[in-house]
Image (cartoon, rainbow, N blue to C red; front, side):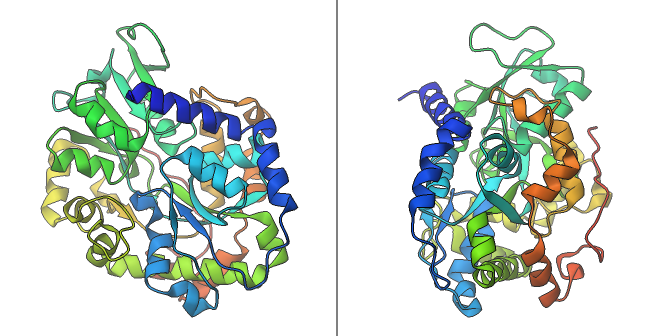
Length: 397
């Protein structure tokens, strides 16, 4: 089955699910289910990417049980469409979703769910063919993104425009000299597409950037965390019904996830091992060397990236992927503003009237994560200043 067909099919399915009409049958089935028991199990849905690490570590380390809730073995799904479908229908009740996707779900298709924490920060990069040395070299080329509603698409388009290039979506014909054609592609399809020259690069979550490096088929041109400092990529999304009707259960779930994030920060190599295909739970199909390059890279990697200018803001001291659970309102506000100026080949009518501050207040429920953070010693434990506000730092060049 060709790559174009797989991506197009999944994109159309997801686009349908995240509309009011498309989500309605699934929401109806969800609402028809019996009210959840106060001691019901945590049902995690995830994609096999490093974004899912806190959910998987919390399961592996027994943190849910320590908090007093039962948990089923996490369900690995193969696409965002499958993950969204399972969540809306109530087959799973805790998922990690791309932060812009939660905006679409909440305000575009009216899914009654909220972001309760960030799952991780940074953890993505723009990976390109070896003959690409600068953003301007992407003129007339094709770049893959994991989905239109992704932080990857937002950051990429901002960088391209800053370089004087125009992002386009052309189903036929080649892009003009100053254009960069964007296509949606499943992350697992990106490395082979780059290796065969089907695309000139891709921007996506780890470990697919590390895959290209380990396979020696591409290189990192820029880390997204070096563009938007400590940006959220995936967030923890939960049903509003659970948050309101069983708050004690919800608190325990968030406590376990936040505890897992703190553990990962001090156990990066161990995290790589337990996530790998060699791990006891076989959470992902990725080999340990690939995951180690993301979670526990050697110090020499930083020097290499500084020399190639994949990292330009050494003073930020960003990790390739890091873990900090608090969902800063300023991020959501900035994200909504930037989505309005981003090319999105999907329903975007709701963005016209969506205010950033309104989005931050209605999309995010930070009651549980604040309690979880304070119980572990506060924001300083996660390398952050005290308090729950910040100013977004974005440096495109």
